[in-house]
Length: 283
Image (cartoon, rainbow, N blue to C red):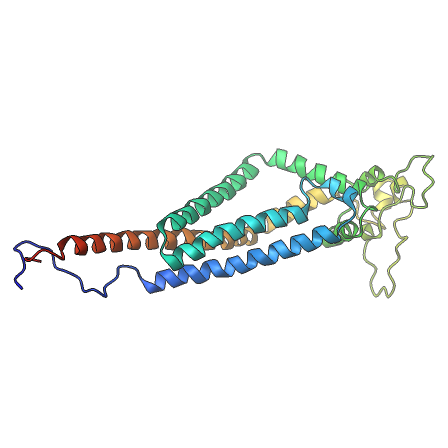
């Protein structure tokens, strides 16, 4: 049948603007993080059920188990929108996924900028967290192991100095403290001894009563805050790489969802056009 002069060329019935590559790449991308979110929720629930030392968590602003559950649930809902939206070619779900992912990315970017601009306040907050952790050192084994690992890793002791351990009731230097660890520091503050077969857990005995020069012969006297700041300055490229590694999947998800939404809209326009002109004898 003749075509009306000036009418646009018609696409075949099997033609689709929606690229299977973009569609299923976005689907499997979201499926991967969907599975990760379920693992996060499971680990968070397990940790919450197994954790009984509530006092030890007082040093943290948020219970890590609760934080893991909340982040996992939010990630689950977000990736659900991405999975179903890409599989069913649902514009509403895809736009919700893209918008939420953009908001998350901008919040992370803002947090990084604010942390850099207000570094002094961030340092004060870190100092507060470390001091609270020192107070609850003996209340929870996991917290104790974490502090010991940090002090041995960074070669430090306490927050500002080794005398910060007086904040802990067991290591406090007051005369009325009946603890055997009075005026001491944890063994993780001690300088490493070459070829030591057995760890001397009492090596920090009475160290707080010594001055810096005498104590420095046996233990680390520098605080962990300064050591942490120096480590961050020395590993800016590594931290930047980690930040970039977290940002790239988010940007890829945003880009793929926007491309797919655009393709779906073009496909809808094509279907409407074909329906409107199917009965046209000149079409």
